Length: 307
Image (cartoon, one colour):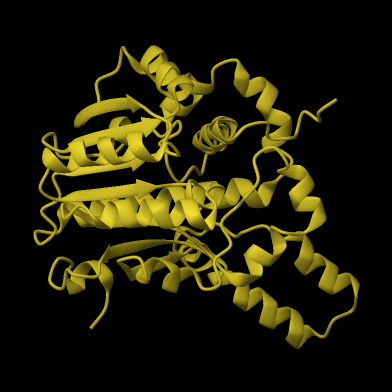
């Protein structure tokens, strides 16, 4: 019998991510309000409660990543050099940004995910009006031929596309991630890409027996030798990375201490060693903005913060 805390399918992660957003929205000191998250999870929220209460660190990471991506998207759209006209959210899950974010009405926002996810969103959110031109497409993105056709159709109808993959890449094998990166780069109108960053330390943690057991039916599969180089070698250069442990400071939300840091304390590690690890974990997770290697002036200094 499966534990109620096990994740049974990759699309199921969409439910508990939405549950974390719903829980954050109910707090008196909430960093964002997402009324649509609770609408989407509905009665399932009660069943998910035990899971979401079981990992304060995961809850914190979902909140911070939501804020980071919100900020990146807002800054890109505000930037006159980007000229983004389409946002393509691949593996959109139960994301509600088209409804809760302030967006230009003219922006085309396309969500792509498994049919069951798309059907749920169409049913639950049909009575609400998005703040942009929203379209949802049911597709299995691991079907290469269908994906290539889909991406080509999007590219043909747009000039400058921002791609978002939130919580998607880790569930792809290295080969699948390479295929997606190359497919996007092959189409000139795909200009920018927001996706996650995992440090070598986190990738090592994800391979521990305990973590593999927890995620056995929805395992992390992406383990590149060097995260940024993997994308660069396939046409995408990192422009800026927003790290969870650094960004959380400006929001005043102290992250819970991961279990392995607590183990160091139990083992009577030196204060200096513990402090070193605590400093390092600030950059263990993040989200990055990538730009095509063949674009040089697309992103301005104001967005990236680079000289």
